[in-house]
Image 1: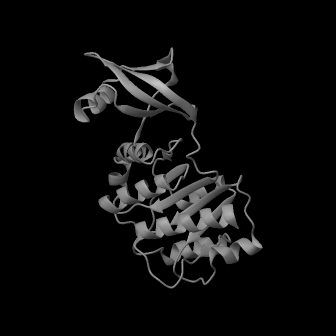
Image 2: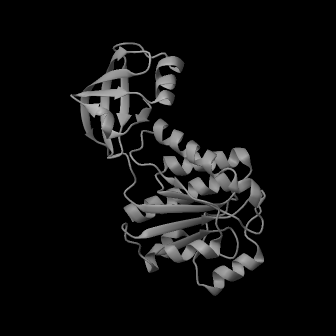
Image 3: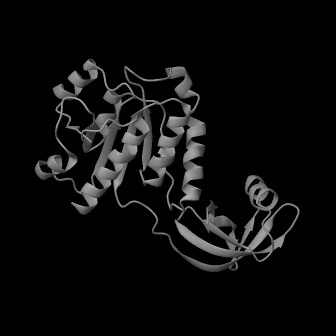
Length: 243
């Protein structure tokens, strides 16, 4: 069951009263939720509320709280992903998958072989944040990732304790190989960088080598960029948490 995000200020006397027009429209008008049907909410404190709809008025509705508890649906890792922006559908898929996998932040980056123009990217940030929010609702995630403004590799790498670059070129090092020599504490910040469909440019590879950033392979197969993002994040999560 998807959950809906609310502010704790609307909770009182074991009831939740919703005045938000968009939420009212979606739950009452679009989903046609009826009296006695169950609804799931979560607030900014990551408290989950299992409720039952008890009253519908012209401008609000009320739900009785049946059960409340701290949600544990979040990734216990300070994981961020930066990806060269893809064409529309693939970019949306990447944001959805990154959100489902629990990243705390999604950073659109512009690279030499980026598939779209910078001006296009800057106008899409608000839309991509809404896509991440919808994914949070669908997977009942407790926290909401931030979709950051457009940036560049050189501008972001200095903000993270661990920078991991996944690329199919110039490396045979797997993430498990890397961890053996460079263990990562789960409390440290981790930035995963994924390139465009055409891969990083030689200029960008020179920058990685000059700054000693690790290049990590996902194996012998060549993935589409949105698939590579999913594979890379899953590899890092499993490696750090279970390694």
